[in-house]
Length: 155
Image 1 (cartoon, rainbow, N blue to C red):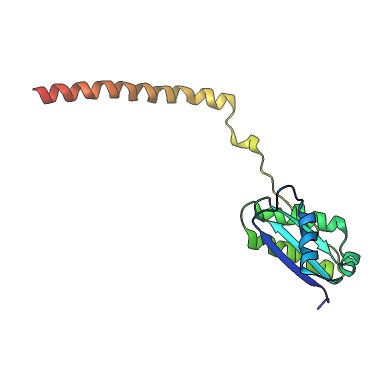
Image 2 (cartoon, rainbow, N blue to C red):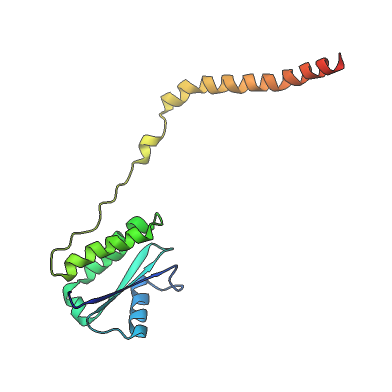
């Protein structure tokens, strides 16, 4: 409906020592795409995407938006190997831009604090006695049971 053609290529990895945007430009030229074409090449292994845009698309889609979509929107789900969801996120962000509407922006990334998952020093000290007790009981059982079995078999 917009007159733009969007080509999305998902590859396992980019060629060695090649940035995603450079590789997208190479594919754009190899395919002979025109001014109203947009090439998105996403790498599953590195969870990044590169863009190559024709002259008409470049008027609507800024380099900052392309960079943000490739480094923030696509990686959010692709890091968890949810590639279909990552492509849909890119699509949902690109469509409003190509229709001339406002950019919805990058997705909000929830970062859990690792500090809350560890026990405090006091909690560790409090449970230390319990673990040492279990350890010594198991050691005692491992020595006593074989002796009892030996005496029972030799009776």
